[in-house]
Image 1 (spheres, rainbow, N blue to C red):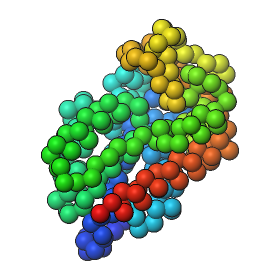
Image 2 (cartoon, rainbow, N blue to C red):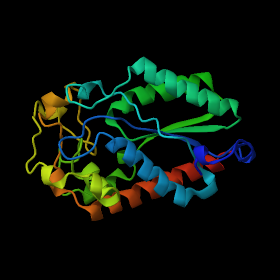
Image 3 (cartoon, helix red, strand yellow):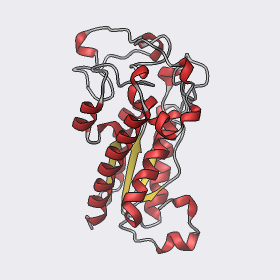
Length: 253
């Protein structure tokens, strides 16, 4: 179910144990071949796929398209919120949801720059609303052991605008992909072995670099390995796992 598509009385009739999901995304550069709306499109695609499985057991809010993207600001087209602004927006949306009587609030994240501030958000909300169910899900962490097996590029290949994000856009929005501009070679700039990782493989320590220092063309990963079939597989795996989590939360009265 999608919040924006219902009338006020219809929303008033929905079971208050239904989890309310706030999709989190970004408007930022995605290399020479993907649109700046890529994270927002992916969040929407995954929520739509999950909705088909969850049915009346989940209620999806409109996507919060602006994210924390300061590390992309050296590239044209990037828009970013300050962390404090982002936190206030999430706080205000959650407060509205809880004032409407709902008991479960879930952040569904589709942007790497939202992960740390998202963790802070759910800790703050948990302190403010100790009687509510509050969770955060980042899509590439769902069923990650299976997702790693799907990757053909190895460590460092599934990053920003890389194999997975490009595959999902090829599957669901192929007209938006500038296929002739997909980089043929990986341009990741390595630093220390303990700091290397990607969306599926975490590093031992966090070592801050802006995206231009990591990859001069704005692509961290290997988009040349992307294909539409892989995008469909990712969507299927992630949506099934997310729907099962939402079902668990719905049944936790």
